[in-house]
Length: 365
Image 1: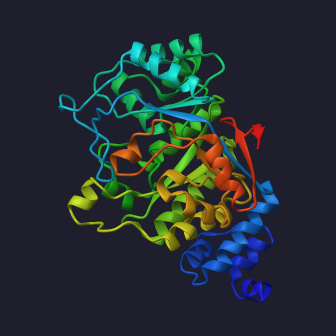
Image 2: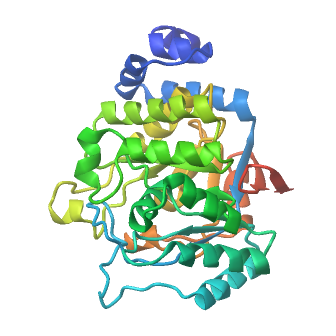
């Protein structure tokens, strides 16, 4: 029965045989009405590529500042310099928090912030040197491509110079935030004061060329069209063919509370769980030939929906998200232990494994 349903869709037929999907194939599947079949094909592709192991990292999230020169319509986290609840961590505070991360069992520290209008490049170098000096085994996954691009403009250094200096100071890898959606038709409606999609891609390409691997994200569930999703996935795919520098794609569900899009009534409710599962499945099928890992961000989904998403093409739960603040600002609960995540995986009959930042397995459960 499944084979018959698959054969009735040109795009699914191509996907099941391992062919690369075109833009038109992607649009067909964004509108494909049988979500169960779509998810089943995505899960077959997942199993071929990575088997039945579901991974996650022990990750500590640290936001060094919430001060931001941008004022994105989809963000509830940013504050303007001088605001009552604005903050910027000192090197001493950063070291204290990283010490807490180590005591919690974290193997990586995930560092992002806002586009601070006055912090010099030396602030970021000092941050990384202090962490590496005191915690040499801890992976520093820090600063999105959007932050790097902003730093380049602010400090009047080239993107390559900024990246090279940060790598020398201890930068190991980069998170995937700031990608949002690349297409200019939609990007300007959800971000303000941030790099263009092409500038993001150019920046992350330079990072990959310097040996700095990264994650990549896709923000969905707001005011996008199917064409914007497929465009984003294809641009990720094409860059991955050039650099092989992406570690995983993390589709990020738009969280509505306290954002400008909510306040202006441009988005009145979060997207459905059905749409979440479609996005996970599409991500798997569009990237199947170039990127093994599709991460399910349980912080945004909740653990029950995350379990379903793991049966629709996902193979990773991102991590423990110790001290996560950005989704918390939009009203989401945001922490878990590795044992709790392992239980989440076992409940669906898959094999949990703790990984490092580069998907090397550290521990099986």
